[in-house]
Amino acid sequence: MMQHFGVQTRLLDWTGGALIALYFAVRNNFGPDDAAVWVLDPYQLNKTVIGQAWVIPPSATGLTIRERKLVKPWLPVRFTHMRGMRKEAVAVEPSHVARRISSQHSCFTIHGKNEDWLDKLHDGGSGFLDKIVIPRSKTQEIKKELRGCGIDEMTIFPDLEGLSRAINARWERFECRIKQETPHSGVYARLRPSKIHGIGVFAIRNIPKGTKIFPADEGELVWKRKSDLKLDQLPQEIRRFYDQFCLIKDKGETYGCPKNFNLMTVAWYLNHSKTPNVGCDQDYTFFALRNIRDGEELTADYHTYNEFLNADWV
Image (cartoon, rainbow, N blue to C red; front, side):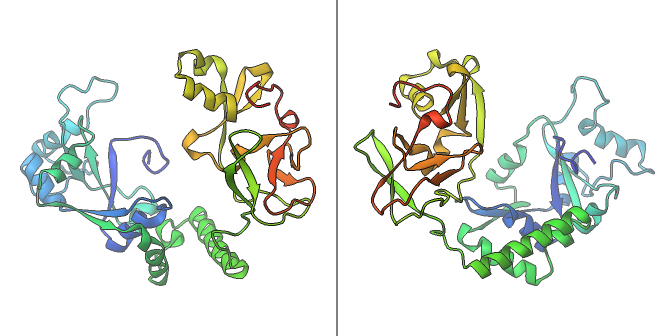
C-alpha cells in the first residue's frame, strides 16, 4: 500500500502481463530517450539468491519456520538497524490488498542493501534477466496499438482516477485531430544575435496585438533565496545565469529561476527596453502590446515584473 501511494520503499514493481509491461514502458516516455521492458525469471532469481526455485509470499500464513528464515533478511524488525540484511534482491508475491494489484498482475522484487544489484546482475550476463529496448521513435505508435488492444489508463488503474485520466487522454487526442496541431503551432519567434544585448528574441512572422507570444511555454518557475544559493561561492559564469536571466524580487534577495538552466526556453532571452513591444501579466504570460512585424526584436520592460533590476540587464 505504501508503494501504491508513492512512498519510497525497497519494492520494485513488476507484472506478469507482457502488454501491461509494455504500457508502463512507454506511458511516460516523452523525452529523447528510448524506453525498455525488463524481463525476469523470478524462479531462477530466487534459486540463485536463496537456493529455492519458488516465489516467496512473505505475508502469507502457513509458511514454515525454515521458509520464514529465508525471507527474514529482507524484512528486518521495524526501527532496528539493518544488520544482517542481504545485498541482493528477491522475488515476492503480494497480497491482493488493492484492486490495482489484480488488474496489473502485480508482482515485486524486494531489494536489500545494494539498490543497483539487478543492474549488476544484468551486466554480468545472468541468463534470467534481460532488457528489450524500445526506440523512442516507436513509442507513440505502440501507445496507439495498445489502446486498440484495450490497454489504457482505465484498464490499468480500475478506479475513478484511472477513468478520469483515460477520458482526458481521449479528449486531448480528439482536440489535436480537430486543431491539427503541429510542432510549429503557436511559434512566433526564435533566437538571433541582438543589437541590444547578446542574444535576443525576434519575430519570425507578423504578430497581432494581444497575441500570447509563447503559448506552449509551461516551464516550471522555482523561487530561491539568495542566501541559500551562496552565489559568492559559485564560478562567475554560473553567477551570471542568476544575474542575467532570473526574475529578482525582495530587493535582490529572491530569484525566480527555471527548474534547471538547461531548460531555458525562448522567453528567457527577451531583452529589456523602456519602449517594449511585449507585455507581461501577473502569471508571467507574455503578450504583444502592439502589432509586431516579422523580423522585429521582441522586448519587455523588466520593471513591470521585477522589483529589482540588475545593472547587467540595462
